[in-house]
Image (cartoon, rainbow, N blue to C red; front, side, top):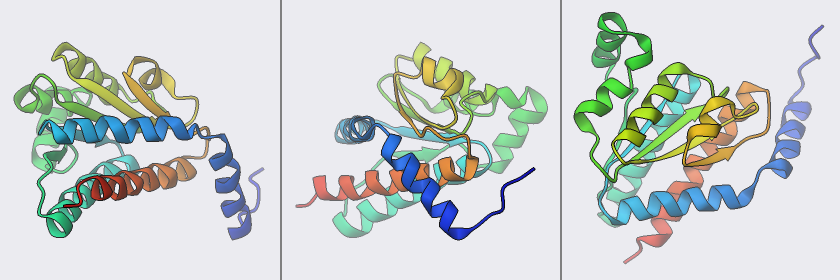
Length: 189
């Protein structure tokens, strides 16, 4: 039987999960992203479902805010945003290749791949991470649940310890906003 939803419980659950998150892992993720930004490397994001929207949201915020507020350029790209290429890879090869297939033509040594996954077990995310590692690129994952395979194979990760997908997605989005604010602070003239 499902527990009855309430706004108070939803907020309380966030508070409980916040207490369990390793804050150092978020700060380390920010440092990794800043390092790639300073080296003018490409930063790719990807995810499925709500995490795909978070991947796009990251790119939107980081690009727009750095450009508008500081006249800076950041090379960020969401692998979720070109529906034509996503469906072409899914239809012609396999859904597992929708991200790694794009990386094959875009990624260069030293770039960064950021993967967002609630379960940490999405085959297309795992395929993208394995591809990035072969290209000598770093991988950063934002995961929920128990972290799954993605947590194990990523170079760095931020784990939201919750089995509630919406809580994970909420907090992953917040982390994207924290990264944006930190990038803006770091690039002030």
